[in-house]
Length: 479
Image: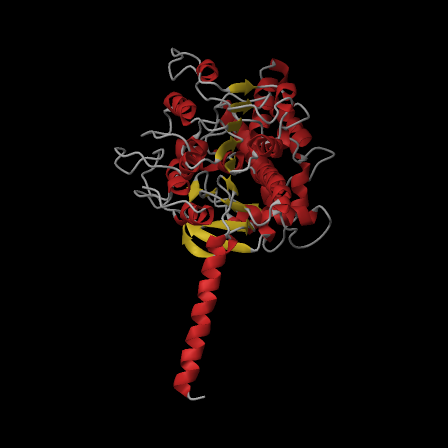
């Protein structure tokens, strides 16, 4: 066999292999699609969570999360049309539609004149049932981009009206933010949703009683905060419905012969990262992993028809495993000392300090000891430097600080100074660092398992993720 014949034979084998590979991707379509978004979750948040889990077993290293063991992994860039460091609306639009847009825009083009079609809307039009779940308000930026078209993410009430027009089959997690409009002068979004045919639940009992056959559901957590979000995982009790339970219920209600598309956002990773609250970030990444477990259990029943994709819209906080003051040392096990989220601790602190006899530095530090395990006779020893940080924070709260507004923001991020100092000191003792109270332009991880998983390996833009999902589902390119 001469060189020319060998070359022809080699090319024939390669072409046959490519044809078989292409045919195998398209011969079987993803009938059941789970699209998980960890809002604000960079690979650093994933790694810190895995290191924390390992530390809980006195191990040095990483204990994999459910999704980090998926067979296909990739990374995605995420800049907005008009800014390198994106926001949730622009990044969410990219993930939902496959198109770039400007910051704060909900599934419209960069000029805010043309509506963009989301993959969820396209799936619904093609006969799939659709579910949208979020741990923050259901009309927040990330869930909104899958069913709404609005020039501004803060148009919460119009976004709520778009939700009802979508006719999607299941919404779960948080409730409506600004349900009576910005000026509290509009008809209740909940009442309008009921008139549009939605069954609304807001208790555990009613949630548990939802059965297959119930059409169009909005399942709201029994405990939601002022922004209509469910509580941080670290703050949840048996009175809450966790994210994984919403996913499990959505599977129960959406399962059908045609198939379904489900988007699940763990949005409070982002909120905790904005607060530079490492322990709370980690607990909500664990929450996401537990929600993915529900999808994986379903996948085991239909492995040839199910696709699970886990990614993020952007990274928040410039989070790092490593802090200058610890050199090369870490002790992530210390994060277990934190009992409440920074947000919840601030509410506890503010309430306690309203009592005149409690309004002093010593009492504030007793609460820091109780909820963060810092100082006092029973907590981690505070250095003179760390004590000085708390005293500066107290002076700032008391209005006697010499810090400028800029200095206060850099230290406390606009949050309660004592709370910010408590989380920062505990994070630093554990060996964790932060660079910003905002987002960064770092690429985000992508994990995939199931039908079409091979499409998600590589390094690409987040606009490619919904395009890859469309290919896996056998849907045509969006307009």
